[in-house]
Length: 474
Ligand SMILES: [Zn+2]
Image (cartoon, protein in one colour):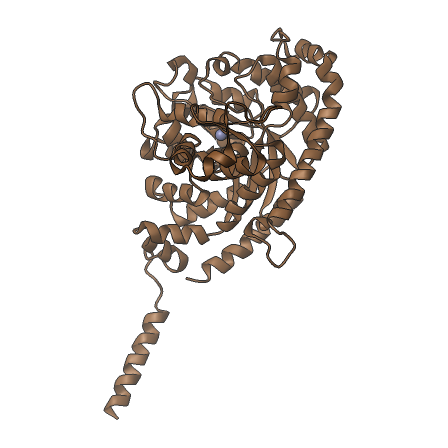
């Protein structure tokens, strides 16, 4: 009898304890789990890996591919290796001539393989006098190469890496019809700097005549790539891979370090492509913003976009702007890039925006960005590698406190050898981002996506369902 009483008392005590409301400062459920796991890196990684993620809105397709994939395709496609320069090269009419065939040389040479992987990325990289991580990062793009037919393979690999981490949506920055077509066609044309006159000049040239063919070819190339992706990932079959569930869209990517004529022509091409192919949802200028030509022509690039926006009609624009820092460039270059991207370049999103507090009247700019919901795409590993900015040096808090929308993205996950989960981890560990904030930012990856409104609404509903399931575990 005594025993029964004790059991009843203990049972009641347990019931009362489990029904007692949590103290106001005491987190429960998924919040409590997050607070617990964030003390241990590997538990945090596991938690964030499973956590549903909206979109990765800043992801360069060529930078997303891992070195091992470039090498595998090189072996399969008869590509050549310049062992001295540590670079992949296309075969000529006589094969690889003096260079080595990738298939032959890579098979038994683990040292060379490792050297190439390091060359194509920042793996094991230690900056040294005269060669920074910034230099290492951007040289990779001249060393990596693949046959155009690998476009679909790249999309498949990138989508699958996203799908494995429960990422729902990718906007991949991709350059089409530039180096073999537009650049040789217009590279020698001198422009005046007057956007209207320059537009007429370009459209009256061979470029204008060829433009419809380029757009048609790009559309066909995306059709082929998408079909290849479906094939590689076995979508629609019982063996469908995680990447099949990832919705992919593309951003046109003119290269801002090329001659002004090539940048304008490629932006015009993108404007037409966006109109004719709904898979291309926006445009974004790429290549180092601190490059001499990129700095010199920055205002002209903004004027070109403004001209197209007003004369051919609005399109979605996201711009790398303010990916600069004190010391990297002359201080005068830190004063107005974000401002001009937003107000002249019609940017709805800003990539990086790291130099914000160096901008003239930056507080007004922040207010403007918050009011107009101009989102900032934050790429923590990239800012660390390219600008040396980590932790509290990053202007995350400046943007957050001003109410500017934010989202985390990868930038170049293959070159940096990271993934989106890694960036979320950095956000938690370095910026002390809470679970609720992280969830908000991951939704921003869909809310500020350039995909059409109906599809976006559907994706947000799917994310709601995923979060309900994820959070109910805890
Ligand atoms: Zn970028």
